[in-house]
Image (cartoon, rainbow, N blue to C red; front, side, top):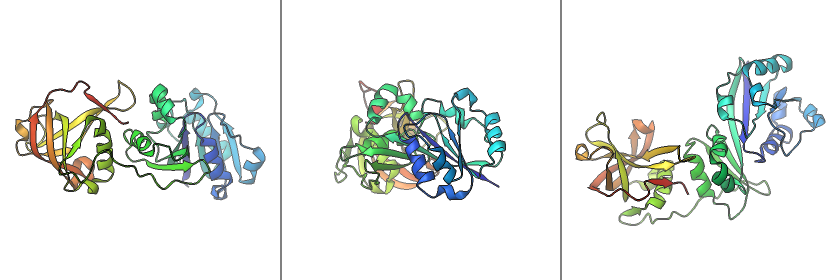
Length: 313
């Protein structure tokens, strides 16, 4: 019998315990049989033993990262015999500790949820970016809680998507309701004959086009790019893009879209160019499905910019 495992990650005081409580005690997850609740840190919301008993849940603490081992989990499986497992992961532990730990037989990770306090996210990004983003990159769902009308939802979405493209993102207001309005105004006009993509807007354009390629069908764009074109690439294909800072200076990712150009072979690998192209949404092996594909109308040599990198701000 498969035993579903639900992982709750997130930085300190991000609302993991509250989400578990709402799911297990206030929701109907407690009706699925015996629940093993593994806590890897003391949350801001404490669990009452009597309440847990009512939903047939047993709470166990794993206080040290070194104790989170396959042997410990197998021991808990034998002693608790759970029908489902909830894990509140420590926000200061490396996600690799969990991801590289072999789960006991029949334990199946069915969903990973990450919580984020919207009121402190920017501060933590600025000071502890690697630590906070590590908690998000393996999540199926990222929940920004304590949101209000001033929460920069688009900025937060891009910050998550650059490290975890597949994540679903939800915004929860301070009263607990879900904010369905996560649309934002783009910094460029989609109705321009040629949309000028500045260095400042490159990250926004890249993520928006990746999420909704149909929006850009038939649109023409112009941007400064660094060319990726190794010898093994097809003669009419290149990838103009930019290096983006994701977590830190040492963590740079090259991001760009597949581009078809009849004179691609004439464009030197690792050169700077100005690209004017028409965008289409079509199937590409690189995307494992449909995605944005550029059809270059013109590519001209360009000077290397003063700042080579772009940022998801």
